Length: 137
Length: 361
Image (tube, rainbow over all chains, first blue to last red; front, side, top):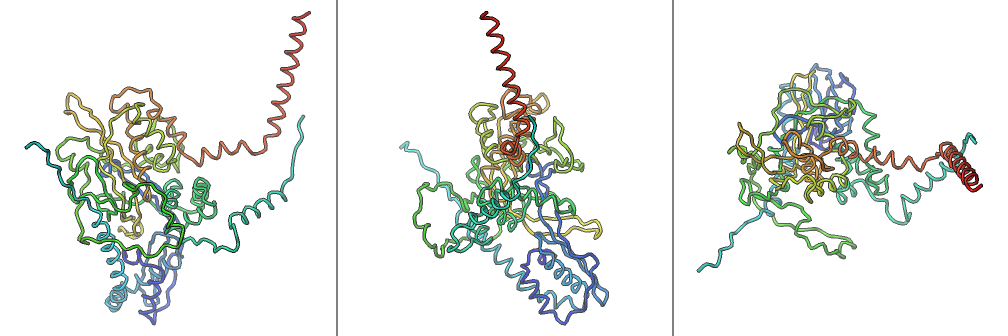
């Protein structure tokens, strides 16, 4: 789910294409766009407060073979949310799970690579302090 | 005299068409794309998301373009848009302790676990205009270090372990007040202040924060920590019965550490002011933390009397959409009001002239 929430629309389409042929999917919840209020905590660790909203697209589907799936993703791409819900439903099917995982592998690799790159680039800006010795000799 | 006026439809239509043409500028130049705005005017987009109180990079980029770079106009567009959508729910509070940190600085500890990471900052630049940016920029090679994840406890957690700083107010499970859902009546609680400040105007909060440093509600602040990076958004979905990860957003957090408060029961401790803002908005997060701390004067038993401590004044005027709406409405037709005033001033002048004539006789 977390991977499908972070995948680009094009990546989701590519995953679906790899999993074809697909059973037909009916909407349990038509794809829609709305808001989620994001909360913070006072002082970072205290009582919650409302920080501001974010756009979210969601969808829920049922496949012809019975499995249902859903998706919630930041952003307004309702079509991608529906496609992600179909992938989620396919994942619920034990016979297809391995194939879904394999299709998601490039997405996971891309996401992990981006995180590693942020860490590596940021690490290069780490300050190495050295203490100046007072001239008392 | 009262004269009802109607008209101007054609003028308005033509003015908006002209606005469209001026917005586009020289048609021989390529139109700027939303991706270009998001990637290259990132901090403008961040400010629009923060003060528009809506996290959506693409929409904020569009708003910046549509507003011709007028950020308050862009914020206005975003606020108007958000009223068109239903709300699905409230997220779990963001865990800033578990951030993919892109920048982190502390003015209180030089050696803190996880280290100080300057990240992409204007700090330490010489503020000299770089004429090379006027041309087409190429690739920018950067150095890299280890990509190993590092634990980065908040500085306030380190101080808190020793009891040297006040604890944050406890989460008692109650729902925080939401200024977008219910009218605000003063006095308000800390959660309401934080929500109001988080969407408040950066310039206004900067000026108020600055005033506290200059002695109007002095609190002797240190930046305990500033961190900027990506945090996960988690939503409890009631119909599913479990929580889902919606993706990540970028936020800036500022922990301001301020001078002491103690009592018979509690030995002296540092106090704190808190800032949390969408995007990389460091100046705003710091200003927010300064003002948030100043507003706590009553709770901390401090002397009142400075502008930044006046909750009703600070919070009632920090919203730039409300402020611009009321200020800018002054240029809309007020012909009837003005006719009445004109009539009044003529009568006053006539009365005064009559009185003077009477006195002279």
